[in-house]
Figure 1: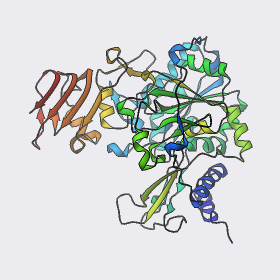
Figure 2 (figure 1 turned 120 degrees about the vertical axis):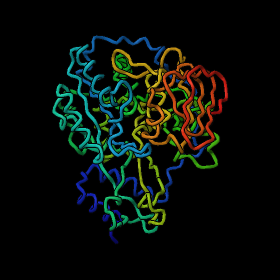
Figure 3 (figure 1 turned 45 degrees about the vertical axis):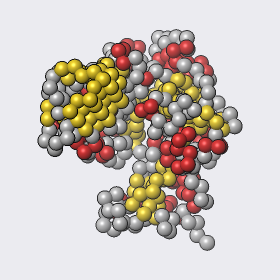
Figure 4 (figure 1 turned 45 degrees about the horizontal axis):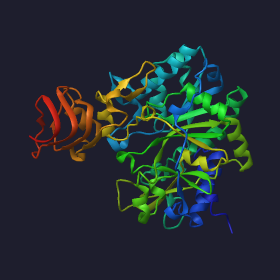
Length: 463
């Protein structure tokens, strides 16, 4: 009998996928075919109770000499389609006319200048973001030739849910493929040859984070701690708050750290998953990895990391609910914490976690709740006391970036003293609106109405 994976392997080879990407996808597919759901029941894990805190570490920042042995990679594969964008999310303007990529470039150049170091920098692009990103990087020639900064993410076939074969969709063959999740970092590093090239150049330490998290710069104190700890893998985590209850969390099983994403939680365990007092820490996706140890582990495991699968059930054409049902198999790069015997975690302050997943996040960043540091990070303003405002914007009027922009023609309101803001209906804001405490603004009509200037504190305001 033929190997059921042969069709996938051939399709991936024809699609230009390298051998490492094919090996990694084989592992995910064989888990799927064996009936492994990737689910992690609550009864099989234990909470993580105590971890070291960055504030308690007395690591010296040093003179930056270790930067010469480090590489900083930003995950830049997302298009921001959930917010109505059709180009790289990192090209979205955030503050003072600057984009994510502007801030990232300025962070790297600041570190190089401050420490007179040839810190290496790369972007992990997808086929969707590559062209726009490389064109934008021409703006910063001092970073290097744009193509030399790119690590290209793979694509993997969607699996027909009925037959478990590669799905076929002649109306649009591009829809037969999907992103493999950021766990693709490892096969992409190996299969592209970048892992060997970096090691040959004396690079031992990788810091990787999401392009949409501008709090995640390469911190010298953390780099020194990571080197001194002699760990192979270090995950930065934050204390969960109410706004984080739906995101993945850190746990442990038999003394080994593991990561559980919401898609890996059985429905009956969702209350425990969202219990922020039981599961106190979430993964920021800021990771530190010893590249020489990663290479050794990949060699030991046969050229791939056995990451747990994340099975997403979709239709092959997301816009056609009657199109064939498919499985999109993904892996999470943070799940590699379960592959290293000496993996660790570090609790970091919220200043290292400022992502943009929704227009609510974007509004918060554009407001005075966040400030720009001298090293070009976007961090929570001191007056927020480390807690971001909880924003609940009416999805009918604010879900897309252009919808938000239309409501902020006169600037973003003050949110630095706001704990919670709920907006229902189309409301036009300005810099003269100041929110404090918990505020609810309602416009029951379909016609946009401007909120009058003034301070709104612990109040429900109807327009």
